[in-house]
Length: 220
Ligand SMILES: Cc1cc2nc3c(=O)[nH]c(=O)nc-3n(C[C@H](O)[C@H](O)[C@H](O)COP(=O)(O)O)c2cc1C
Image 1 (cartoon, rainbow, N blue to C red):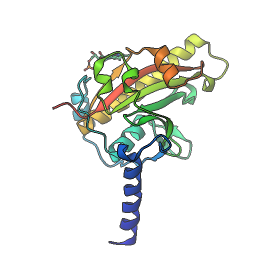
Image 2: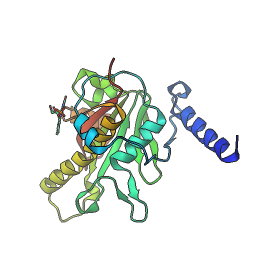
Image 3: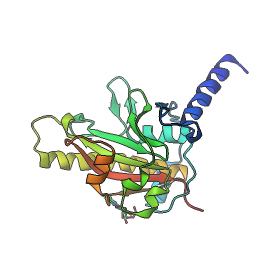
Image 4: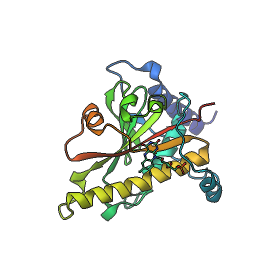
């Protein structure tokens, strides 16, 4: 094995170890370094658009770390490192939408600059991410949270809500297209008990839950 391959194997192995639910205890919810996104993958766009759909039935099989890494980058990663701009547009480039990731292990925040998942809290809160029963089975539920503190002082709250909803839609569609390309199931959701979820994930009053989106493999 050459040196570069060996180093890659160590990094992947370490990341998979950190991602494993069996290695966790209360003190051990650690940051998950995501893998460098593979930008040469994916099916042709027109075929992906043909297959895009909402699913409401999920296998409990976990998403492998490379898939999760690619999906988050596709959703709202940094695609122009020089300027820090992202794969989805945002009003005035505020980049106000934060992606919270809920798995059976706990709650994480996607940090696009470091391309890692920052641990927020241990424990399975998947059932709180929506009012529909399938949400507790999906291995990943994304929560789109608008941080109004990043949206300047000139826009009214009503305008901020419109921009945040639009900006979330672009990210959610990126996730839809990635999932269609990869044969994953996904569904964006508004049916959420927002006050309960906001409390569970400890949001400030100027952080607003816009939508959630479940992702996983289709149930066989
Ligand atoms: C803003 C928005 C909110 C939605 N909320 C929910 C929801 O709470 N639960 C759900 O099962 N589907 C939800 N959906 C999915 C729609 O029901 C779905 O997109 C629609 O039925 C069309 O189906 P398709 O996506 O397969 O084309 C939502 C879609 C959007 C755009």
